[in-house]
Structures are given as C-alpha cells and as structure tokens.
Amino acid sequence: MFTLTHKSIYQSLLVMTICLGASVTARADQIVSQTNFQPPTTLGTYVTGSDVGNPDSFHVATGPVSVVADPCTAAGGTGQCLQLTVTPGATPNLFSNTPFGPGNYLIALNMAGGGSTTDVLVDLVPSNFQLFPVTAHSAFTNYEFSTTVPIGASARLQVNGGGGILVNSITVTQQGVGESPVPEPGSGALLLAAGLGFIGVAASQRFKARRLPIRFGWRP
Image (tube, rainbow, N blue to C red; front, side, top):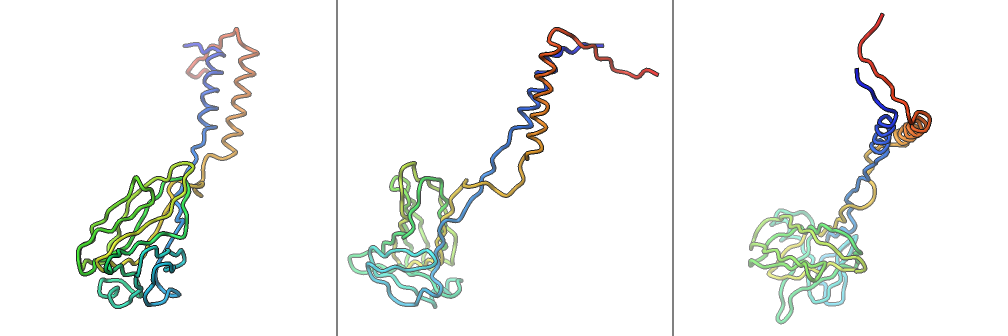
C-alpha cells in the first residue's frame, strides 16, 4: 500500500491539463509566385523594359530575351520557354514584378543548357544569391535554393544569365505560412483539460491537509 496526497493529485492533474491543452500550430508551405512562358505569352523577342511570362511576369531590365519553342522541345520540354542569350555588351537580367515580404522562401527554376556552359545568377536577397552552373546542351533540370527575406524588407527575384540558357518555369514557395488543414488537438481536449484543472483546484482546496490511502487489489 502506498499513499497519495491530494497535493500530488492536484499536481498530476495540472500536468495533464498542460499536456492536453497544448496545441502545436502546424505550418504549411505556400506557392506565392509561379511563372511559365506558355500561351498567352507569345513567341518572339522581348526588349529592355518589357514584361514576359505568366501568370506572374518578369520585367526585362536588360535585354533582349526570347520566348522560343523548338529549342525547348529539343531539351525535353513541351511548348514554349524563355531563352537567355547574351548580346554584345549585355547579359539578360530580369526582375520579378511580384515583391516578396519577410519570410523563408524556396526558389525553384526548371532550366536546360544552351550552346555553352553558363552560370545563372538567381538572387532574392543581395547577401544570399545563388549561382547555378548549367551545362551546355543539358536537359531540363530543377535547380533550387532557400533564402530568407528579413523583417522589414521587401525583395524581387532576379535572374541573370546568358549562354542560350532555357528557362521553362520559375516557382517561389514561402515556407512555414498559415495553418495546415491537418486536424490538431481540438476544443474537446481543451475542455477536458480545463475540467481536470478545476477538479484539481477543488481537490487541493478542500483536502489540502489530508492523505488518501490507495490500495491495489480486490476484496470480495
């Protein structure tokens, strides 16, 4: 036989209350920008100052760039894609028209190689840019990196490169935003926890000085 004080009962109930009442807030990833170069984007040349891509477009800060079809198919893609080709004295440079606020982001580009192996600079935060070496004549491949926009800042995604690089799509995913639809500890658990807490308080106040013998076993 061992004894259990009402104080220890109350403490146990309090622990149960904390455990049952705790709810972990699940976070989810959310695509915040998606760009491809399929119709309604038209085939042709896009000069400096123009916009290209859909549904989220990019501004051509330094051009020209081209939307092409046949080279995309040859690299394993379908339909249309963006081609970055260096012209004398100018390397194609594009910025997203969509700004990105504070948060953690995953940047993904689906790219294929052009006529020469070239580094593509992808930049959301100036102190954390990424250089992707894209091999000449390589098939479409996903290139990804993560970065963080600090609190109080706003950034636009920059893509800079040449060598005939082909860009099939650009996707920006913000990580850890919103609540996921996965069920979490609900109101029922919280009500149960609250009830246990009230019981513990009442037991503690009423029987503070007592000790309850607890016997294990069965008696007829």
